Amino acid sequence: MKPIEIEKVQQALDSYSNKEVYIHLETTNGAYANHLDANAYTVGAYIRNAKVTYKQAKIIGDGNSYRVGLKMELGWIYAEGLTDWTIYQENQLLLAGHDREGRLMVALEVSETPFQQ
Image (tube, rainbow, N blue to C red):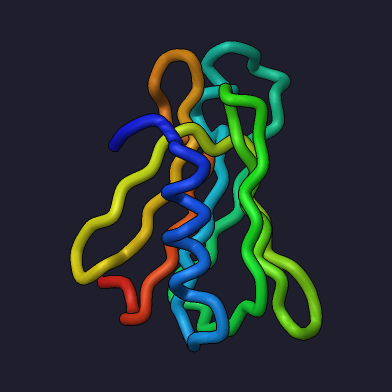
């Protein structure tokens, strides 16, 4: 993976607009928070192979972290805290956010084919 290049990521996101695509989205602080503070809440969200069609995609950020929003007919999908990206396996877009220690905190993937289970 490499640091987000906003123009290239926007182009990749736009290439999926108005197509039926599969989304993988996850967030976690999981065990990362628990070992630092026994009172910390473990939070996370996970969805894989959600089939959607988005009409518009937008990436914004300050150069350190980014937010991606995907506008659908009846709502939005968004991920915040993204730092890195790559394209892999059959033109699948992977965006990820890592903390200062390199641990995964958020991931958003877009693909025209389902993700492997």
